[in-house]
Amino acid sequence: MAPILSGGDVRGSAGVHWRKGQDMKLRTASEALRFIAELEETAAAFYEELARRLPAQADPFLGWAKENRRFVREVQRTYQSAITDALEGCFAFDLDTDRFVVNAELPPGAAEAEAAAAALSLERQLLGLYGAATEQAGALLADLPRTFRMIAKKRQGRLERLALLK
View 1 (cartoon, helix red, strand yellow):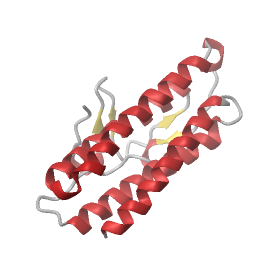
View 2: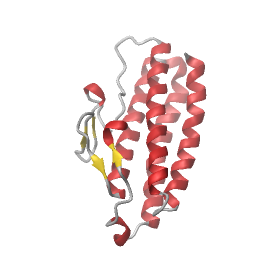
View 3: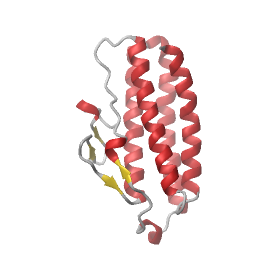
View 4: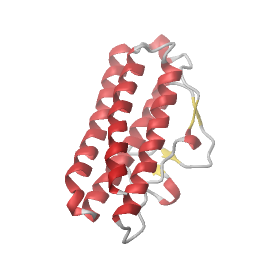
């Protein structure tokens, strides 16, 4: 599980550390997909924490945490079925990590409305990431943009549900 660090930092299970302000550019598909996987894991941990703090809303949050991990597996499966060494050598992405690092921290004692606002912000960031990744990968990786669009559509439904909590 990717620990959530202060200021929205993410330290992934592979030791990758994404921090706002690093101005890292992700160019290859494997870099971009590793970044997406780490943010999805951070979002999953965020939803598990929300479920712990808001037990009346625990079921959807735990379901979303599980779904986030499914998204990672789906993206990885799609990537592995379509990628070749030659394609990986190409620069399919130009993602700036600063635009998409999420702040997945909840202040102690956050009220339901505050937690919902934090979750909405996180979901909007991830939707933006999937939108940019879809656009950038479209020319070289036909299967990945389709998977990204499917995930974005599911995330859109979350926005509607979270808006009801505010």
